[in-house]
Length: 322
Ligand code: SAM
Ligand code: DTB
Ligand code: SF4
Image (cartoon, rainbow, N blue to C red; front, side):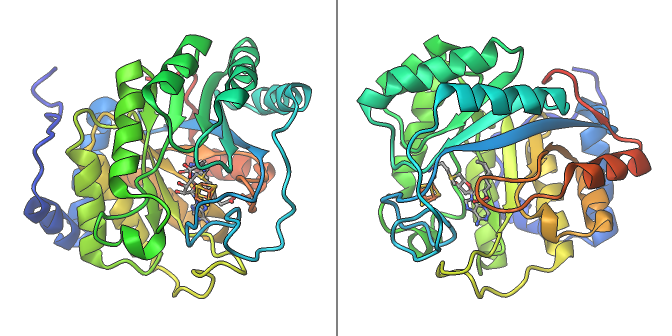
């Protein structure tokens, strides 16, 4: 580590994090951008493409989610997608420039009987030369190890918000359940992708507390997705007040400072953001996006628009993960 490189800390206090959030905007962005350049090429963004491989009828009651069986969102439920269809979508993602293929399933946790199929999917997608990521809900030690053996590179499992606000958002599982799965994934040697959502009506202190959780984990998640709530009709959060774009950018900046070596993803919500907001997120240290017309069930900016934005900003795709 050179003298200039930010020291990676795991002992951040909530007070320190609060102080970062309270900095004047320019001071915060300057600090975040300076930190960013110590570990990354500031003109490179990692590109992932998402595919929902099992849709809807989820037993969990996450208040933001279109796929929860507890809300009436008019989403057509579908069972686990066949291998051929998944491989075809992965090939298309690779041809479009994605380096990672992320697959999501609306499960509380995968059943043991589904594991053979899920592992085959990982193997076939990986064989295309793509990094693989899955998000399937809770995992025990055994299932995390099975996924590792199949060659899974990343597992996405979000803490979503602060432990204090969590019960307002989800009642069918606990924060500790989430932390437990994260430990199983980490111990199995699979890279952790863990972040959350802003704009769910949480307080500023909840944002502090949420980032505090991530930044004080035993190891920082290798990938930190920061989602802006996509408001879905029929969910309890459909009418939530809009988040100020500057508050979203602050969130990215503080995440970058706290976890300087992690890839921070400007995740869901880009369809509702201006190019200028996204440009400031990239300046603040966001260096990953989801690319492709669809997220899991909702819209993402179209790929022509993203290409034009990358060209305007002189941003290039990151070829392999750092
Ligand atoms: N069922 C698995 C789970 O919950 O871990 C995997 C799929 S789940 C849809 C993956 C993540 O997407 C959630 O943890 C949440 O952070 C994010 N997400 C879901 N719906 C969202 C929405 N409407 N707006 C923003 N992010 C959302
Ligand atoms: C994450 O943090 N965001 C992605 C991914 N992990 C799986 C999902 C975003 C979902 C947005 C709402 C939807 O399309 O259903
Ligand atoms: Fe199910 Fe995941 Fe949606 Fe929660 S976020 S309802 S666990 S699919």
